[in-house]
Length: 361
Image (cartoon, rainbow, N blue to C red; front, side):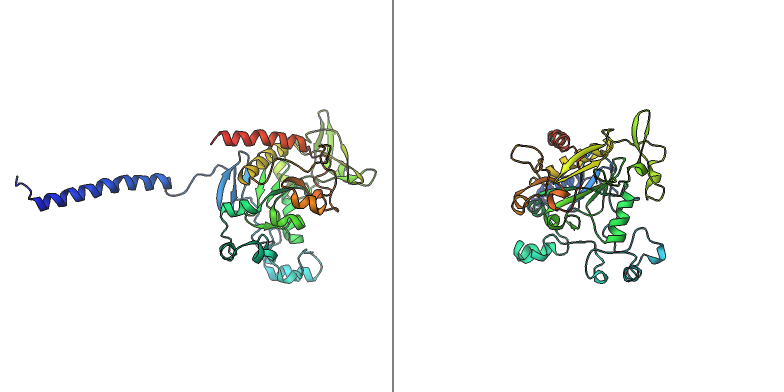
């Protein structure tokens, strides 16, 4: 074997040193990126700024089979040949559907940019340039979102809710919660959904499947939606309501069997409770949102004596409140989520689950 001269030896050691540096770097790049190819989904993820966050209860995203997509300008339930925007406008003009946005014919979208009308004063020019096409970072969104607004849908199922919101009224909401506890996410949380007027810019919204609350001694639809057997009250679904086939053979029951009576503002309402499945999913979603958005406190509006606020917040109270709230806290003409919502239970259980999330990190 011929001995190496000094120059060849120097080159050899340089190449060896480079290789020793490159190999660990390649391994680190592989580790950092995880496995290549299709990634596993668990079916319990919500999406915020393009990132998946597991909440521990079934979720269907807008891009999943069986999901509901609020990004689409076509109608979800219309006949296929009438799904296009031109047909939608024609049915508006014929009075068959009533989009809330005006002028209806020029507004195919059901969502918008957060603080869109105030964007030039709320955001720096650099931020505005970044988010105008959806390029929110998580920290930017965390700085702007501080309310979680809870609704009942007066539709009874999430399918029927999406039909009314998306196809008929041209509105949107981030989440829908079906009677069996399935959560549907229709938009990334970076979007401004149209669900709660002045709270839209700063909030996340959810529509819970429930036929609603009605003033005491006035007409209500409860006989069409609830029946009784030897175990108590259970939900029945009128055949014309969309999505009822999902519950075939199941008896979904209110968490509390009795008709609940309560006062909101100056009106006494009656309502059947949400299902245990809905409470379980709502607890996990609420905890997750509070974990993602630190400004969404696990608290609800309260009166000076500590009781849950049973009326609409004043402008000053609304402006200063950060946390979980009902639609009626935002708008005086609303009663959702009604007297049946067990706020204390929701907040207590969400605090427990949030602590579990944070311990698991």
